Every structure is written in structure tokens, then in C-alpha cells.
Image (cartoon, rainbow, N blue to C red; front, side, top):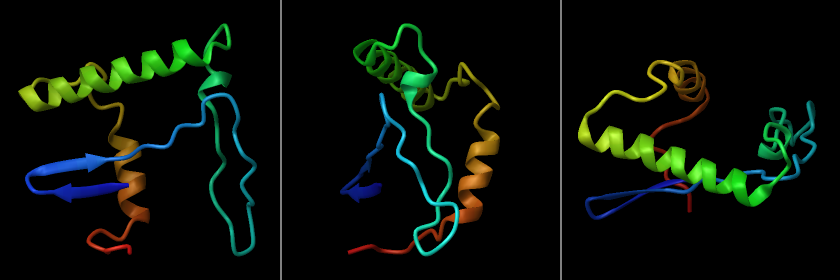
Length: 94
């Protein structure tokens, strides 16, 4: 979710920490495969996974605000491109 409030951009992110819901691959509720952070961290420690994710987001936002290169420069280009192809920008939902 992305919203504007005055000069601020508010971004909401949903994260599957320890469980990835099954998403239908056909029919009216079709979607993409889901994953959870718990599948990619060892040991399966949800608190550590969330702290790590928060730290990475804070570092990347800080670099972006300061105009510095991303620590993962270029790795997000494919994600942004794929997302942009599937979203109708400017559509107000309410």
C-alpha cells in the first residue's frame, strides 16, 4: 500500500514471517506463489528475521534519502520492472 499524506509518502508492507499461504494458480482468486522469511533464515527465528529486515529497509531508505548508491545496486531492477508491468498507477482505491 502506498499513500501520500501532505509531503510524506507512506508505504505499507505485508510480510509472511513463518507461514506462506497457499495462493490459487487459477480461477477468480489467482495469484503468484507466496513465500515466508522463515524459509530463508537459519535458525527459524522470527524475531531475528524481522529485525534484520527492518535494518535492511532502514539502511536502503537512508541511502536513498542521501542520494547514495544502494548496497544491492541493480538487484532490484527486475522486481521493479515486473511490478510496474502489473500495476495500474494512479488508481485510487477506496
